[in-house]
Image (cartoon, rainbow, N blue to C red; front, side):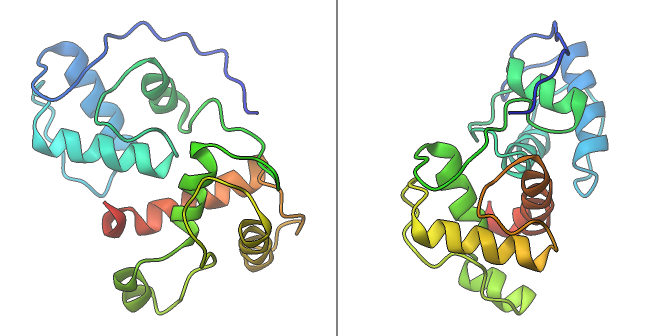
Length: 169
């Protein structure tokens, strides 16, 4: 698990919030989600919400449009601070998120010209199909092919999530 010593003292923000903390959020989002045109106006509106949702998707955070402690920390350090080590037998929301990223939609397939890695049900269970998908992904990225999601595989999964995030939201 990736650990971080960053201690963040920022308020929880959601759609409709205003003020300096929203301006700080927007500055981070410009850096972390540069492909969304954000105006630093201190208003948590539709564009800021979209950028937050994209950031959540790209960093495998829960996507609910709220910026709390974990999101602030991820914004400061550039990635989710508590990414777990996942392997066959794991079962959790993070496995479902990985399955979702590795399973391309028809639109993404048409756009990228690639079928994806995972073809099973998105069920949050790291079984044989998920392990095979992870191994295939690791092989394509020239990583150690062990079927285990550790820090290096997470880095490449976040790159893939960034690539497909506009299609997946």
